[in-house]
Length: 422
Image 1 (tube, one colour):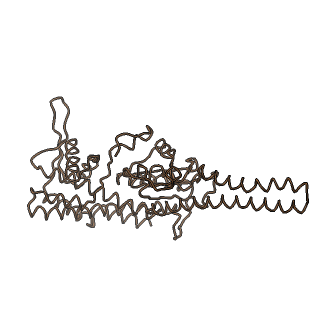
Image 2 (image 1 turned 180 degrees about the horizontal axis):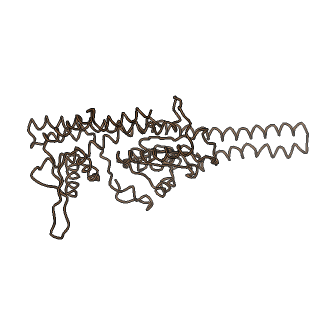
């Protein structure tokens, strides 16, 4: 990751990433290699990971069901009928809730939302080697863009300056890009017949190509192509026009023949323009085809899976570090530093900004750590964290499952309420 950005407006891209570019299984394999763990503790840790994954999966399963219900009236791919008509006020309320839930989901998956100023800075970045594209943000009522993972990449190109030999140029690449789009009603461009919301997920998008992920783009011809088309038209019309002036003074029949030649030259230039436009649209379509991961409801399901994986990894890392020194107490700042050092030592990840607050919150919610306030000499307090031992953690996770599916559980009560309302 570069330490500085050549464009000040893009300085936000050089900040440390919250995304953990590792699978939970890779972290777990490294955890159980610890020589301080006994064979029984390794067995307990395997069970711990299974139960944590199952609990997160159950919690996110409820989220994805709620998201699908909210998204259903806006889904352009829906093949089922809506059983009632939504009033404009109900649609606005549902959209606001859908937008907020999508934002929370993406942030849980360690995506970063681009502000309008940051988005404009990205959109204004010109691709010197690819397609020339222009996007008008005013065409949309809502255009939320999120990214995750920024890395250095290369862009292959060839042009006259390289004698049309392939070369590469350094670019910054977003590993994942997610967008949520709602068109502005009554805009200048032709809008969908229904009020729909588009959710799209892309991979490996170069910074200069970010504008390609927008639904409404205007492909612009490059100067070289404009000169090529203009030269074709001018060259094709120059000679017929000269003959036209001569024929006008000599013979009406010759005049008609020359007019026909001018018409042929005009259509030849028009065909050259259409061919160039088709070439541009094919390149745009090909780029999007290879970079698209999922659309609409399937994109939501994929984002839920990503958020579930990030939550599992963060909890596993924080619990492991706290458990590794059971006699010591960590402050949140110390835990943050220890996790980041562990990731650097074991996996060579110096740029990860571990989400320690989120990890601690999850551990507290699941009763896997003990928290106490330690007074300091200056009158302030330190919040000290200590992990429960593996046996206690497994007991508490198991108890949660028992309570969750008991007849008197709040989950069952909520389900009964939903059934009665339906």
